Image 1 (spheres, rainbow, N blue to C red):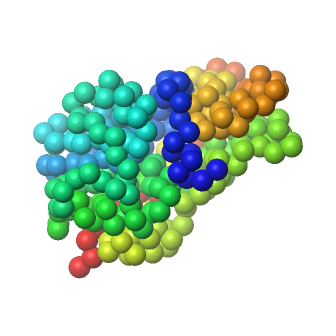
Image 2 (tube, helix red, strand yellow):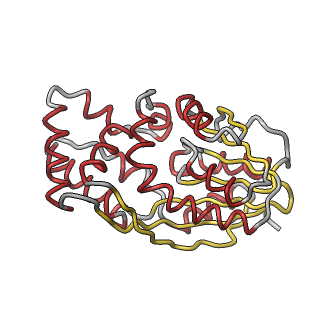
Length: 268
C-alpha cells in the first residue's frame, strides 16, 4: 500500500475507532510533549499538518492559548471529526504537498506522526518552507522502528501469526518506515530547510486492555481494509485479540513507545 493510498483509505468509521482506542494511548502522550516544545517557541500563527482528530491541536491550544491555529488533514473524515472535537482551531482539508496558504504566513508549522505518510516528503517540506516565515520553525515527530513500539510490535507479531499467508505490512512500511535522522535531514535539505535538532523520546503508552489496542489497530487504521476483505476476517480479529491478551495479560496494560522529535528552519 502506498503512502497516498494509506492516507485516503480511511472510512468514516475509522476516525471513531482511532479516537477511541489509539489516540489516548499513542498520540496524547507525544502531543503533550510536542505542544510543550511548541509553546516554548511562543508562536503567534501556527499551521498543523496531518492533524487527525486533533490530539495535538487540543494540547497546543491548551499550552499556547493565544496562538492562532489552522489545523489541516488530507482526509475529510478526519477534518470533520477533528473540527467537532476541537472547535477553537480553524480546520481545513488540505494536501501537505499543495498547501492552500500564502507565503510566509506562519511562524510555526507542526506535524505529529504525519510526515511518514507524505508520498513526496521533499515536496511537502518545500511547501512548509514556503508558508513558513523567515524566522519560523518546523517542529514534527515520527515513530522509531517498529521494534521500539511495544504495542505496535506485539500487534504486528500477532497479526503475522494469525495471517500466515500474508499479513499486511502497513505498520512497518508506513508509520514506522521513516526512522533515520540522516534521511530526514536529506529530505529537509532538498526542500531548502536545515535540520536543527533530532531528539529521541521514549514515553509509556497506557491502555485499558490489550483487546482495546487490537481493536484500534484492526478497525482504526488501514489494516482494517486488508482484514475485512477476507472471508475469515472475524476469526483473524479474534485470534489477534487473543494473542495480544496472552502477551500483555488482562486489565490495563503499559508499553514503551519511541519517537524522534525534529526541529528545522529556513536554510541560512
